[in-house]
Length: 487
Image 1 (tube, rainbow, N blue to C red):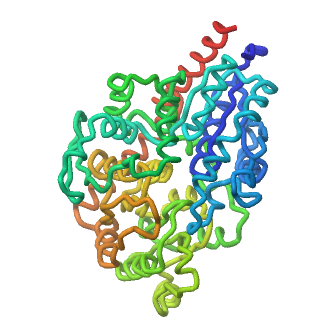
Image 2 (cartoon, one colour; image 1 turned 45 degrees about the vertical axis):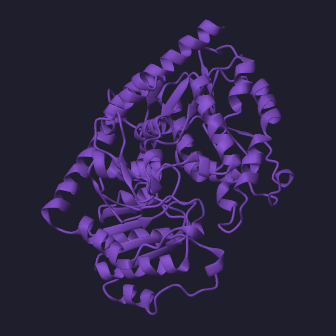
């Protein structure tokens, strides 16, 4: 256990090697370090992930963030050399268990790093659950981050404990989630059923639950006003010590306000394209960094977007291997969307999501309902078209639809473990959802009004005296006192 040096609290952050885990935890580290001069933050990652983190840190030169490296045993776990991030696993390779195995092989170097760096506290990714054994051994308090919100955490706990879906005789039947203040209805097919996940994932999820109960507490990328009932449920009913410190993406104020230009000509072109559009007229379509679609599904998305007659930016996801050589794009599609008033803009690869979402021309967001994207949509004050795919995304969809009432479902009704088994969503359903969110009727206007109000609340939460700002102050002071008492 390290002692406090010059009244400084050294926190080691250790995220899972995937963009949806690394970047939010980096933003969290920025928040801690910038919030209190007594905090020193170190991010632990692998050599192949350094470039991504360094680029993000450089954008905010005021960040007091240090990097520490841990070697990643790719080849020893049966992964290609240099495969150190979940995004480098092809959509057609079943190598996720190998990746989980490689992460589990980091125990010894992790312990060595802790002994060398002597942090006072660690904040680790819930998906690296074995860290609790080492931090406990060394007497270092550990806080975990699930990378999701209070609402999905509560639903996961309720469904795991009460199993309301198991009494349903048919897969297509729905049930009401018990014990919560909102009417939330889920299909049996939308439940995150760990028994269907396979042994490696099942073992991991069970270890995560154990780690949560043994950790000092849980830090959550959320804000109180977004899900107050579920903050209280998590703390009092489930009985976890927890702090809401988000939205962490708002630490990138320069990026959100458009003051930070990109270093990519394609992205600058995208922003110039948006500058020519009317306020609130463009739909942003993005499904995250880990999603892949069949050629048939991509074709239906293209047809639905075009038929809606609304302008759009579409970040085209990966295509399944079986369709790699297939010309999935409808004939003449790109030509039509470019000629007819430049109605569409297509991005292949990474997109500057925060800049796009916060551009005045963007009026809606079609999303896979990953927690980071959902929260970024909330911060931007945008109504959403929900298209969940896996993990807790179906639970996040219910937050958007049933609790916040700022979205419309595209109609995905089934959680499937493999991309290729996913049911097809047709263009006509996509067109319907787009017109519902981007239209001008009373319901759409009411949705937009609620979304704008939530966006204001999100920004207020991280300002001085806001709910998350105050919570972060309380957490830092509590950790300083804890470490002093341990010393």
